[in-house]
Length: 336
Image 1 (spheres, rainbow, N blue to C red):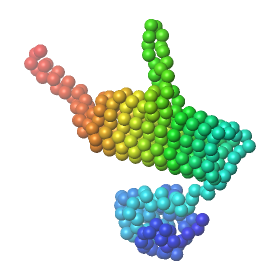
Image 2 (image 1 turned 120 degrees about the horizontal axis):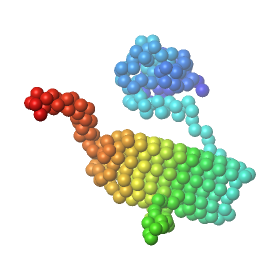
Image 3 (image 1 turned 180 degrees about the horizontal axis):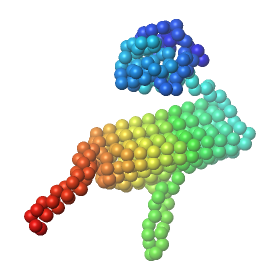
Image 4 (image 1 turned 120 degrees about the vertical axis):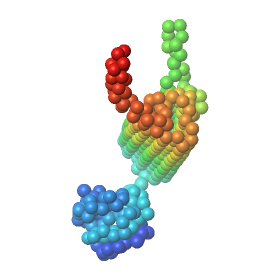
C-alpha cells in the first residue's frame, strides 16, 4: 500500500507540517523504520532518536515540527499509531466458509458469513452469530452462544452452557467453562463437588493464550464487557470481573471473588477467594491480595498493602543491616 503524507493526515483528521506529497508504504518503530515508513514518538525526549531515524513521517503529540521530517501532529501518539496500523493492515473481509472435516450438530444454528475451519466441533443447540471465525480443532459444547464478529482461534475448548458476547477474541489454548476446583475432605476421602453453573462473557472481550475460566459451582462466572486478559490468566468458579478491567499474565483469581470495573491487575498476582476488589484499583505485579480493597486503591507486595506503605517498608528493610551495626556499636561502647 502506498499513501501520501497528506492523505494519511486527512484520514487521521490531524494537521501536517512538512512535505505533504511524500509517499509512505508502511509503519515501524523509530529504530526499525525504513525510508518509506511512518513512525511515532511518545514525548519530546525521543526527538533526537526521531531525527536519527530513517522514518520520513513522524506522528507526534508533543512536537509541531522536526528538522528533516514531515510531522503529523496528533492528539495521542499511541492511539494514532493504532489507527495507522489499521490503515496499512486492514482486517480482511470475512466470508462464509465451512471446511469438510467438521462436526456440527443438526440442532446448532450458524449465522451468516461465518467461517468454520477443519476439525471444529459444535454441539447440540448451540448458536453461532454472524461473521464469526471458528479456528481449527475448536470444540464448542452444548447450549453455547457466541455473538457476532467474535474470533475463536485454534484449539480452544468452550464447555456447555457458556455465553460469549459480540466482537470478542479468544486466543489459542483457552479453556472456558471447565470444572471449578471444588472438593470436600470427608472420612479419609476427598469428595468432588459437582460444578453445575456456567460462564457469561460480555462484548469486546479479549482472552489471551492458554487462559482458563471455570464455570460456576452454582450460577455463572461473569466476565464483563471490554475485559482484557493476557496469556495464562486463571479465573476460578463464580468470580466476577467488571467492565474494562485488564489482567496481566499468570494472575489467578480464586473462587467467588469479585474485581470491579476499570482495574489493572499486574502479572503473577494472586487474589484469594471470597474478597471484593473495588473499582479503578491498581495491583502491582506479584502482589498477594488477601482482603477487600477499596475503590481507586494502588496496592503492591505480599500481603498487598498501599503502594507507598510497601515502598517505605522496603526502604526500612534495606537499612536493617546499618541499624543492626549501629545498635551493636552502641552496645559495645556501653559494655553490654
